[in-house]
Image (cartoon, rainbow, N blue to C red; front, side):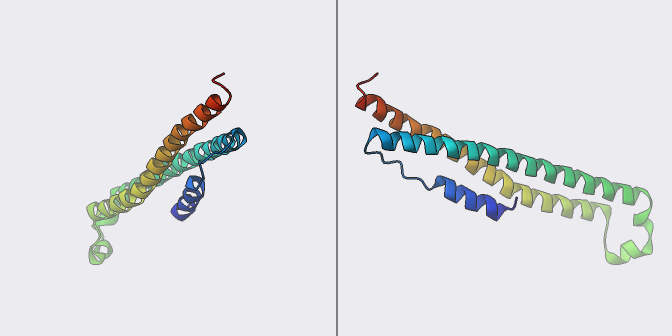
Length: 136
């Protein structure tokens, strides 16, 4: 999934009215929070899978560069004319990898924070219900 899609889903999930005027409102909001927590859990799984795939892709590309240079690609005139070296290619690959992973780690952090906020939002709603029902 792309970063923009994650950001859009996070925006939709975080937009919720937590004001309850009755027990029915409290229960409806709690049910909605539970549903959103399940969606968040699924998004966390997806983002972790995306990060894992990116790491695997990075390792495969790194391996390919190492194999190409081990087979003598670097000694040719063509690669020197292009100005490529194994170190430069690996450094460029690492920078690209770090940049893209940083964004995904930020999304994962936001998902974790949103999940915590939803759990904290449940307590006042549960307390409201208990208070209105006479502390059962």
